[in-house]
Amino acid sequence: MVDYAEGIKRDVAEIKFLIHDLRVKWFFNEVIHYHVTLDTDLEIHGVEQAQALHGADLDELKDKAREVRKRHREYSSAVENFSPDKTVLRTGRALIQAIADMCELILNPLWGRIDRVLAFLPPDSRSVRTRSHYRNCIRWICGVSSRLEHFRAEQGGEEINEEFDIAEDLQEFTRNVAYGYAVERSAARVELRLDRLDRAILSGRRHRFRRMFFSLIMNAVDAMAGRKVGMINISDVVEGDRVALRVADNASGMPPEKIEQLLADKESLDGELHSLGFVFVRQTVAEFGGTIEVESEVGKGTTITVRLPHLPDATPTPRKPSECEKLDLLQESSEPGLRLQRAGARERPPRPDTEEDAAWGKMILADYRTSDAPHPGCIFAIGVTEEGEVDYFTHRPYERLWNITHEDLSPMFFEATVRGRLEQDEEGQPVLILKAPLNMREFFEFKELPEEERSAEAYVRMVHDEFIRVARKLMASGMEAATDVYVTDVPKLFSGHPELLEKEPFSLEVLARQKLTGK
Image 1 (cartoon, one colour):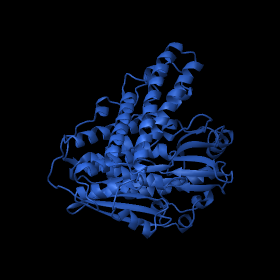
Image 2 (cartoon, helix red, strand yellow):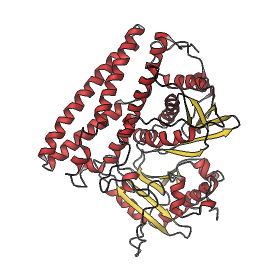
Image 3 (spheres, helix red, strand yellow):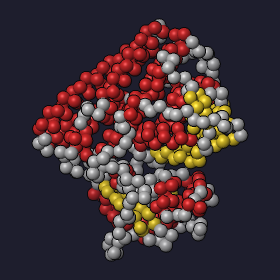
Image 4 (cartoon, one colour):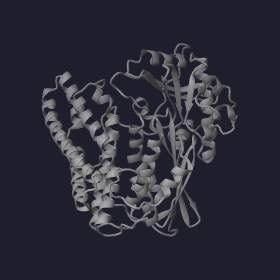
């Protein structure tokens, strides 16, 4: 691999790596779109004074966006036309500064006046109801701002090596940044699951490690474009003097020649704007003194394993919060109805008293049929006990102007229960998508499982049985047995069920007739 360790070649390579990884255009556009919607809601509801103030903020945002687009055109032209390194560096730095300026504006708590302005609007207005989508975009932009902040520090020689706990870093970064990217870029079809996370201290540039890890996440999300349901499992396991970071997806996989291409040396970065993500991954792994392996099978998915040396007796360096975190912008809103409540401070809704209330399958079908969205469908969450009783159920149809998520539908339980969607397939027929609980601990809390009985094996066994019980309950309450079903993580949850492993989707009836573990 060509060594860009110093000089202008190194600076150009670093600029290219960073810009490739930022991927801000879509999120900036979504923020603008949200504020245009908010401006329209204020006009509809006659909130003239707030609209005037917000209109001025929106104009400022559009001006910043025009500057970003202009600088991006100049940078892309310089790279694609093989301009001299000085030109690429100058246009790249100008683009990064424009992006930083827009991030600073969006994250400034005095700009946009979101919380104050939303207080004037009714709960059913679109801008109030899509607040979680906006919050995901803000989380992502916070992550971009933090990366730019630390990139500038590294370039100025201010920040080099830290000692940090990989488990703590993976958990924090996944929840605060990667989760939002996966939800928004996959239309909530791709799940990020944190599996086993062993505590291990790494030494190196922590924010470069984060960028490397996130490149792996972005590649996995992109690989699952168009899938009905996808799963990315993240883990780190101590193996002797190394810690193995694994990112595994159930996407379409890669042939051997593609793997060889990913791991091959690059002779030059001149004029290239593609494949930079994995080049950066390889260079960062080498910087940390590690190795990288790619295992993939066409049609089944890919697992990337990064093995890094760790320091058994070290103590993590106290982490310096980013400017974004200092502003407390990653915290949930304190507005009534918008706070994401955690497990432990919640009460389940009452169980149904009548047979009509218990028509779970019929209610989901009714939502699907009455949906007025461009792509009709509905969303629901459900919990079924070992005795076959539904102890939690919430549902809602897709609406014409609202892309609802499970977090919107079920803010107290969205990580703890089986979640589902009923949508149209390519032939216009209803297809059921069932997702496993997002958070293992939340699921155990919801099921009130004693701490000593909790384990990864118990989670697999319990979710396996839960899916089967949900399928049986939906069939018994009005959903057609022939309904096609997609389920998250089938190979892991149903490894001993050939009927489910051979073909997806399978029918609801096939899922319902599988045997429970009985444990």
